Length: 323
Image (cartoon, rainbow, N blue to C red):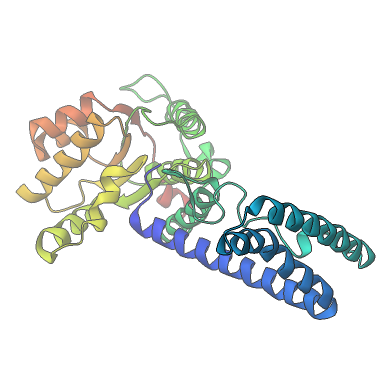
């Protein structure tokens, strides 16, 4: 799962801090026990140097180290028995002096070989949720979606009521979020302003992120602004890499930006690269099919209207209904 560099850096910093705290608490606990039971410290120090020290001494004198090692092992076993008796008498568990590693899989490094460990993945997931929370209101949940705002009268052009249509759209979005996987289809949310496109895309973002996938949610204006900053601001590739590498990219309010040759090129690159890599995109727009074709180049319009599954939003502006 390709988390943004910002999320990954924060997660790594948290992992390091938590490991340092864990190690510090273990060292403090060990020091307290040694202070109360000095013989335990003596035993542990002796056990560390017995076998290795005996072998080294024999080699220095040109002797066969086997006998020295055997004697050292015998001494070591006697020390172990004494240590066990002292721990039992003090009602101490072995882990009190030698706690398990911070993470049983990676030891606190965050990686098992070249793979990210589940401990770092969990911190990345938490940091990503914080990042999403800073962009969203915090109220976007599928449970909070209300169909009663949508009229029940059939639409004369579609032959179905907005409520029926939106129920199907809602169920499609909830199922998409629940079953999300790399290679899932891309979606185009299209319809007038205030019909719930941003709300449902935010619900998807939260659910997919909760399930451990990397999600980037931004407005079209912010996306273009970041690419512009990289173009004119030097080496700031981290600003834009996230749009190409994340598991799910959600672009809100496409069509509200000032359309230029540069924004057209950026939009084509982002959409085309992600489609080729089978990395899904959700785009929400107030523009109709015809308006999309008029505003964007044929390659962009063709991909949006041909390679994306279209989710139509219909009804009255919910913001005005709430008033």
